[in-house]
Length: 99
Image (cartoon, rainbow, N blue to C red):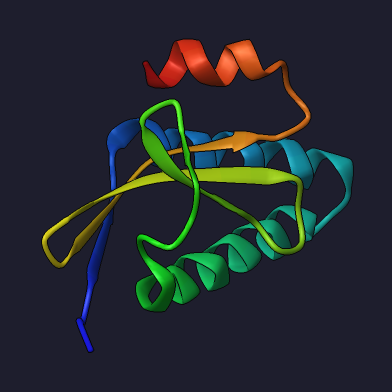
């Protein structure tokens, strides 16, 4: 069994912060719940890296509780998160960001 390490690019970190801020404005503590949910998804990714379908040149995992797509790449035993994007947005937005 491969043990993976994980990192987020600066853009992915920005995606996470922006989404957390958006949800926090909707309801108190919802942003914190969003962040915790995404972190749980990322923890699970350490076990399932590389099994997802490829979109726009990256693996795409769908978040469990929120409508977000997590785009990542695997380099040897390291998972790199490139984007955490709202799945409700136009797919061309995802494509232009990732390609």
